[in-house]
Length: 296
Image 1: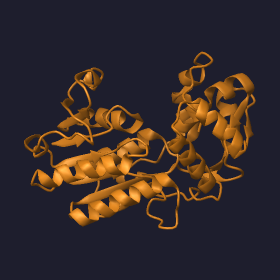
Image 2: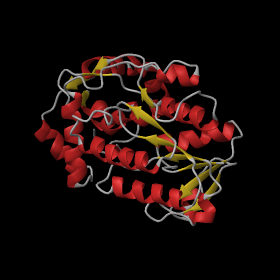
Image 3: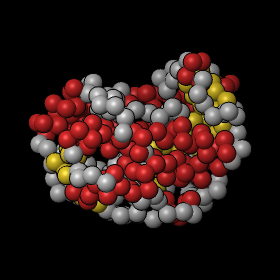
């Protein structure tokens, strides 16, 4: 039985759809009963949270756990509480943990990466079997700029001339499903770096958007100060704002420019092209003004 945390997010929900399609027994961890209303039809659920785990007898049912939590200040603490609950339940489920490409680099000072390294260190101490999924920047990040793309013809990102091998959340979910079901052959301790099929500058991304939507969109390499103002207006906490700026500063040095083969090796298909993802997301880019999620 598979337990999926982060079940209502971009990756978690798509993962549940994959598991449902494969008739793999899966359960979503949700905070309330209401959180299970829109789950795929054959997916079960259990009420709880990473920092308020279900009882040991419930956790003992799961031999594979997908571990995903939001980028917040208490992320490491929450995941460690949950990992300790799994250990206390008295069995050894395989953990498939979501992180970021770069968490494995001890010199990376981005706070998101530091959180994931803390969790990975704790997992090592427990001895639980674990496989890490380390995606680059998600294509879904572009959804935060739909207003600027539609209304101003601009793609504002504080990344300079950097290239990024951006990846679709659907491809990350496909990898997670392959690992959790045993379809993919992986070893405990593996770090799967999940990228798109090519490294693109954000000027390249703007050009692809222009082509797909038949309108001119230009890359606007905004400063950190401009980005900070936009992020604050988007409702992020001060900790999250600083984290996003640290992430893009790191990206600006081509830290996520490498193209890896792990999506293809684990799923058997090539990662999605940006043009294909943009076509699938067309409706989101045409939504009414003022409804975009926070930028960056």
